[in-house]
Length: 146
Image (cartoon, rainbow, N blue to C red):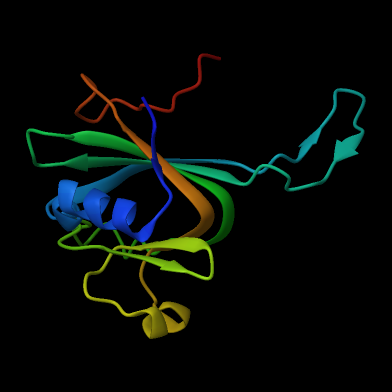
């Protein structure tokens, strides 16, 4: 069941429930732009969906794996350093600004830091999330049946 994040209080409760994403990692992402090319090669070039789905796995019994769905994606700055470094999230920041929701993979950021933040940052018009049960480990959640 999806849980909506609509208010600053919802955001605060979500961060608390996720322990500010301490000891977690981004496992997978899936992006749907809305653009496509038909079989007859006619193009629908509009980014009219802009949905980013993010799978987070956590070292916690409760909500060990969650999916966040960012609707109306406005910005994605993905910063995977390299395979030589770990990618665990120790702390995260979430901010509501001008009607948008920001998620950053670093704690204690301020609204004034958002424009210059160089880590992973997601900005969207809306956010909802849900728990994913019985799917921990390396097996892909977003897989193709082709």
